[in-house]
Image (cartoon, rainbow, N blue to C red; front, side):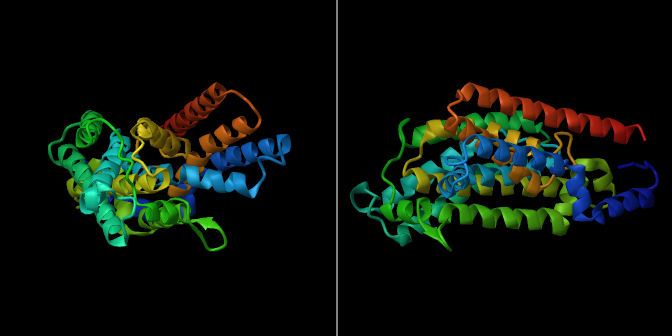
Length: 350
């Protein structure tokens, strides 16, 4: 985006031109097509190697379930990175939200045993998780947008703060008293022809995120702020308020993801989520969202989430060591960033 220092109409025209770009143009800019080809190629290769094990309904159901929580986190991360920000705290916020939900349901249950709790207590736990996640997101947004502290420093600090607070809530151990009804319904329940309920929740949230990013003024402002925050500010976009909303939204989604994880594992499983922040960032970047801001799509993030999941599942089925999966994901991530840099250089040289 070109900035005219004394020509506000010129700035307005560049922002307007950006906002009117069709969605397919933004998808192409985010390299969604080539990353989709990578995912398709992986599926084809593993299907050819182990057709009776990989290409099964059970395998794909398992893939969808295992990626649901990460997908919800990554949708929020997409918004953040498009604004050229970063959020290292989402994994810890997820853990904290799950812990708050678990402790809330225990506190509302007789004798502190939430395993037999009904839906009233379950909904109270959901509300507690959402409030807890949103509060951390609001704190991140305030420190970044209002106090003007770099996102890397803020979210690095809140990453440790949220994780430490989660440990303090239950003396460093997991909450394991989770309603059986929650685990049976949301964690492992199915509907609509056998589609897992956990997957349905993730799909609904992803569709809402895609709608919000690609068809609303909120989404257009997100791209504009990431492309050039100063130009966006000069044409009247409230950059500070918008960044506050972005980080609050990310915390809100981390709260939902924490409750989903609690439902699936029937435990807070603290150790299982310590790298979720890095996984969400990697999935978003592999999906074509630029670390420099202004470029990205929810569809690309969905593809980016599934690439490491397919690699892990395929390597497990074909009895390849997990270490190779790490190397392969790292190679794809580096390639995605390299393509992004080349694209940016070409654009700047015009």
